Image (cartoon, rainbow, N blue to C red; front, side):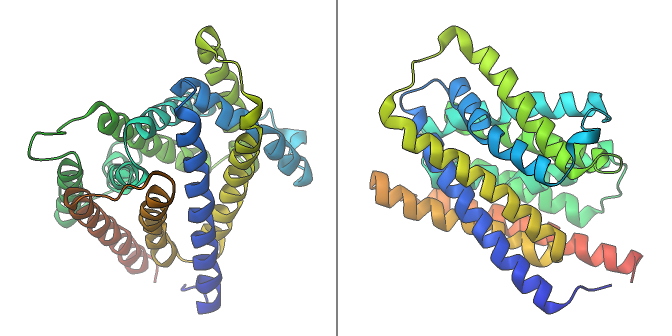
Length: 294
């Protein structure tokens, strides 16, 4: 059954707010990555938000059953989260926000492909073509002229998107049995502990001047998570999800404001290809769901 139009409008506003918060969070990560190792930035991202997540879980009254969870999938998502954050932080050190976002937009296509393997979903030929087109868009962003083809930063963001896709599929399976609050709590706790442990040998002393940046990192990440949860809980995914691509506009704006850089024609062309394939997959998924459950 279709959800009311008013729900979709509120959810779209929530998605736009989430994208804005996550863009600010990524900007903070990029600024921090200029001084701290990528793994330490990943640890700081999780550690800074952990107190807020704990307060949220307590407010929701979910601490009583926090240990009755499917540990294997939570540990898997924790490891993937560490890899995702550290790879993305490394990629941000090498790429602009717009370039990193353009490559990361391949995640919906990767989720579609992985759903066949892990969720046994049926994917027709048109959707496989859309996945292939999206991957082609990534190659365009990575420069077909060879000047920047398969850059380390680009591959790092691509690896981050792959980790996110696997984690998202694992999250779908986990959501069948575990509460959402438990999923958020254990993901953040495992990322904080694991990334901090891995970053410890090369830990760089925090500068007092970065305190405000760390607070912004914590608050933007926490508010973004709440907003994106609200967006998908109230509205139709096919109506809400395309607005996640507004991150590219934020990336271009923040790149120009802070670093005076603009994306080149390859980045814009590749982003257009990836976004087009992603929107097709989202719309096709909704049409399939309505045909199965009118």
